[in-house]
Image: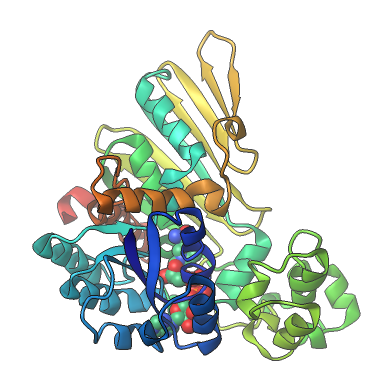
Length: 423
Ligand SMILES: NC(=O)c1ccc[n+]([C@@H]2O[C@H](COP(=O)([O-])OP(=O)(O)OC[C@H]3O[C@@H](n4cnc5c(N)ncnc54)[C@H](O)[C@@H]3O)[C@@H](O)[C@H]2O)c1
């Protein structure tokens, strides 16, 4: 039985990884938890029978004690990872570390060096590598079926309401408080593209900006908060918080959506509780009047070591979901993660379309990536020979270098950054 300490009981710590105890009940046991919000600690303590003596009001308090578990899940906010991860490794913990490793390149390097020096296993949560969708793409590319990969085109459709929720009103709206979009959200894409390509990135350039969610785009007659806005403006506004969190068929509590995103506003959402949160809390603010600065669209161009090229677009203005086209010398692959379909077209042959849902059963949590990531971590720590460590700190550092370089380029008007020289 692998014992787990969880630092940060939010969407990831409590609502995602703690639940893995139910799935892998014979392999993992949560023995210690930390979060300043008492209600969250109480819920986890009761649900997983955690000893009250090992429930702490902060990761700092938990880390004052000697090592309490085999592994610590670091699920606090981006700028807290470094302090918690460094201390935990010194105490002897292996880590499941949420991405980004840190918003500071120097801190990322220090975490990597410390893991190596102390011989700690550190798995970074690039969950996409574990999804049946990307696993299938990876196997198909490696099989040689489409020949040598020459170019990849990938789109991360963030989704209009997801952008408004997380990156305009929410926790990752301001890069000074959290991290830039390319590191926070698209480090997953940098990671997956580097992995699929099989090549290190040589040069990178990027453009992007915060185009739309700005005060000058606020409709005439709109108010500071959605619930105070005029009916006429709200009717036309897809970002109206009441629509997103209460009435929308795909996301609103009126339609039974009491998980994410509504449970970020309040625990155990009901219409009444959500309405109260919209009245006063950050998620009820007009999207044109927030303290946000992260981009709502960005393109990244990459030249890989073998001369192949990748173009990546992140954009807020769509329904959400990732898509990809991989072009090789003998054929192409088109994948749509929302549909969970992949079409492989070898030149001169009939295309074949694969419904990825027929290849696996669990597609919950990031297309099935969340639970498989934890399973792999358990394998790795058990040392049973099955653990792949697909997203070890060393692998993850590569995508972080790419993301930092892309942001550097974007800030400097698209300047080309030579990653080989930087290294
Ligand atoms: N891998 C992924 O796909 C993925 C997806 C979403 C978020 N994330 C990352 O996961 C991390 C957590 O995100 P989240 O959505 O769960 O955020 P969250 O805000 O829901 O959870 C963070 C929790 O940390 C707690 N906390 C604050 N200070 C603390 C302290 N000193 N000690 C212990 N706990 C403390 C907060 O009370 C909160 O419950 C972030 O770094 C985020 O970027 C990763």
